[in-house]
Amino acid sequence: IGDSKIQPGANFKVAMNFELGTSKSNVTGFEAGFLLDYYFKKVELMANVENYAVYPTVFLTLFYGSRR
Image: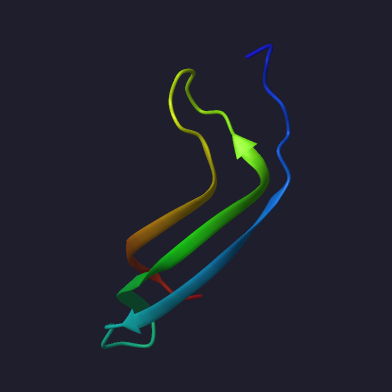
């Protein structure tokens, strides 16, 4: 923890949001997409392994709740 540093970067997100709710008071659905994290320098996550400055991610988010 003492060797932690702030590493500036940027991210790019593309997603599709599908709301499946049947009533106006509740919401149910999911979001699927792609996220790309870019750092200005390579991020050292572990010693003695290849480190990268770009990290791609594919994600699926499920949600359920009520609207106010």
